[in-house]
Length: 115
Image (cartoon, rainbow, N blue to C red):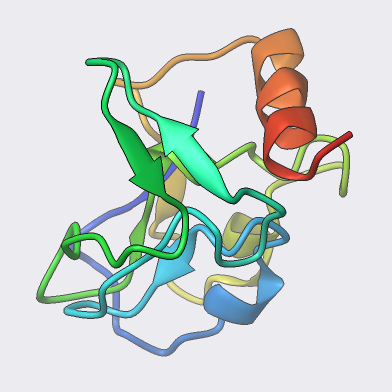
């Protein structure tokens, strides 16, 4: 499963630099598929092809957020999600709406990092 940041987030920013996929962004900040990855373009589920450097709408305007499609729970990088390890208020938690197996997470990592 992916990790999500709950609304208990105090916007300290400790999690953001820990993410090996650059999947964590400050509230209100646009994100890109390419940031922190080797992606040049991405084909979305509906078949739309997106330039990886194209800015996407923020997931949250209020607090730090994780782009689910870029989160691998640090699989292939670390033994545990680093955002959760450094969060002082324990608001980086499993996202029950986005369950993925370890194999799926590792495949996502390989895709994003050109492995």
